[in-house]
Length: 428
Image 1 (tube, rainbow, N blue to C red):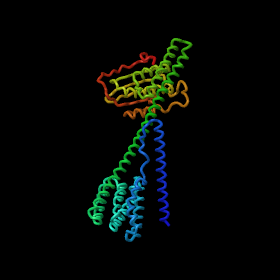
Image 2 (cartoon, rainbow, N blue to C red):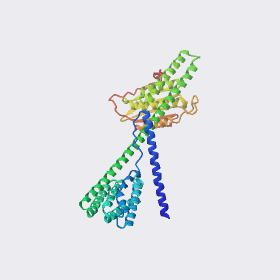
Image 3 (cartoon, rainbow, N blue to C red):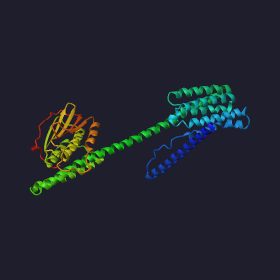
Image 4 (cartoon, rainbow, N blue to C red):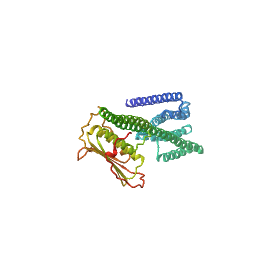
């Protein structure tokens, strides 16, 4: 009874394939309908082909069935068994042709070889309409065999089909050989092209998905760095304005003016970050760092040397300055912060160090922090650079960023240190 169970499992598999094909067809109809309503072109090539697309070719065997039914075939029981065996093997093979793992399984290849043996036996024994099984054998071979073995298999089946057909029906058997070769190659070409198109479509969808993920990551990092720094500066300047309001109203008004300027600039940067066109300037970020540090009561000391940098490098270093200064203002409790930009042969190094003990002057807002340095590490790593951050041996905290320098201009480096007096607060 094991063969009955196998037959039942095979029928269940065919029914499942048929239901899947119907579901894909209904999904395609729904997508086309939605696309027509939206006025868009439908690019979906339709549901993937299945064994049902190759079943109609079995109608080529109706001539042999008619001969058996009309009693024109000698030994009809042998012919009937051969016809049933051929059809069963054909259905088994073509339903496994659209899955690469099942197509390359040894059981499928064995079924194809057995199918060839049955075809040769029926063609040699009966001839006539039974020779049309050779093109069907070629169709099944084209559906299963791919790669370098396709040409050899196609030529081999064609030679066998031509030889047997010519022995049975004379020179007219050349038509059978031609039909066998054509069905083998055309089937393989069509199915290979369909499979390649679907793989390309899947690759394009994967690339689009990764592009969306990359854009989301970029926007989340930009938003974190922009808002984290801007809000920290606003908080620090607001506290400074509150402290100065009773003693020096003009200084307090200057801090309020800075707050307004920072807010306006933040709105502009957020709009640019959304559209992806933001290119930061290192000089601008250094000026903002001086202003933020001074407002927080931290003495800034900025040193810059080396040739001018390309905009992309300046933008990345600007992000590092923004994040490191924000952390120094919020978390360090330092009284002094040094920022050094050093250009060397092929490399530029940015070092930001403070003398704090990690105790913030004001408690940071809950739930903020911990992702800025990670995002910067990813940014610099993508550009071939590196980022190191950690406690300094002399105390305090140090952030060091290195990037390769591209497109350097032949300009003499200047290494004039800027003192705290020369780096007073400026309106952003």
